[in-house]
Length: 224
Image (tube, rainbow, N blue to C red):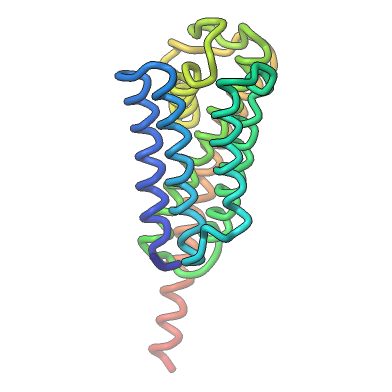
């Protein structure tokens, strides 16, 4: 796995994460849902940080997925930890760091390659996942923060629905089966839609600008 093809592995890991969440909701009950979601975090770790260092198991970034799995498992036995949802906060931080690392490689840097195009897709998916986690936390702590979502559900039951809702929102499809019901979640929803549209505009500008720069460089080299 090299720095030049790291986004191939990341996009595969993200697709597996989304498919795993959907399959867990469709075919498995609570315990298996948590197990599949926790295991997928390790897959994401390998995809993101493994591309930069063969000895990724010894890197400090491993602390996030390990902590997520540990706290998620501990929540089975310790009610207070389950109510704090520490594992969701750790997962949110993990995705934010991953998105930041992806953005530094994708936006306004270097020549346009297929790896960079895949990276831009990964960043879009990561942003949707970040908002899905924020929506899940809002529902858990505010209770009836969204219409169309049952109250009193556990995080692993809520997350698949909010992953779906987040992708629908960031692409501005807006089916309406789930909608925000309090001012703060309304703010979060239209903020995600706005960021999603601005990201697409920035992405296009970055790709076009990079392509123009590459062509100008090649023309100058040919004249020389």
